[in-house]
Length: 93
Image 1 (spheres, rainbow, N blue to C red):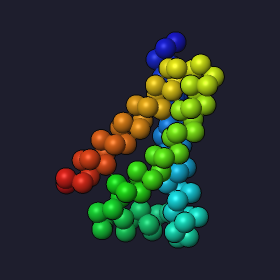
Image 2 (tube, rainbow, N blue to C red; image 1 turned 180 degrees about the horizontal axis):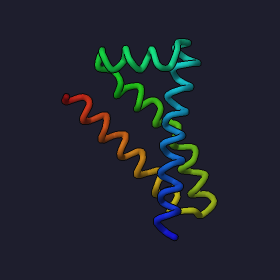
Image 3 (cartoon, helix red, strand yellow; image 1 turned 30 degrees about the horizontal axis):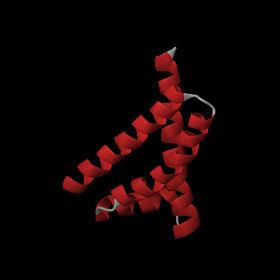
Image 4 (tube, rainbow, N blue to C red; image 1 turned 135 degrees about the horizontal axis):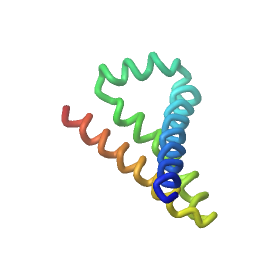
């Protein structure tokens, strides 16, 4: 039961991160999602876009905390930490 709750939070965190990336690219940059991801990867700024997308993880995290769904909030936190690790690795490679 606990693992299921953490997995739900993890999936919600991934969805929020992807939604944040999509919103940033489509609303702020006003360009196509796939094109921007390809160019960002080539230019080495993909980590920045992932970080901006991870900002949206605050919303489900605090909603889960407010609803006393601590294990789901833990899953969102794991997603955020994983995003940070991916950004760190991409900066050094």
